[in-house]
Length: 184
Image 1: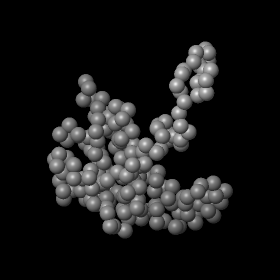
Image 2: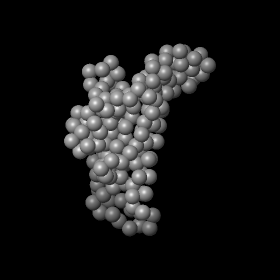
Image 3: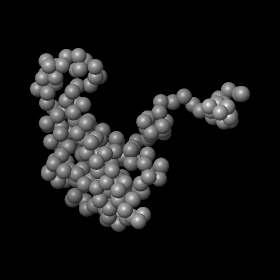
């Protein structure tokens, strides 16, 4: 066998299985491919042009105090939607933040396009309630010092990630359900 060939349990060879050593994400896709810069302004412009959302309903997070958190969540969601689109498990989908102050999010289909809309009120609530909550960090450090030392981030940051990513995954599962109901 040549370099890069591998054997299965039955001894059959797969030729040409040589690949570059790269870090793979949980979906088995090399990270350098996913590191392209995704532009939220371009996505909002496209959503407005395709009548997916109105200009007044879309929240533009650039040059705001919490831009870093919004950009983190946007890049996370956009990358995940792109992965599922490439796997053909969903059709093209928009990921937007809405100008609504309520603590809510929604997934919908409009003009045969899927959209995830997360209200800015929910994100701002999670930032104040979790991310900027130093009392939570102090409480966990006092009660469970070993637990706090195991993470390379603060517990409040972890709580923010859990709450926002849960919201995203909940809404993205709705998009998967939309696709299954559209097939029937």
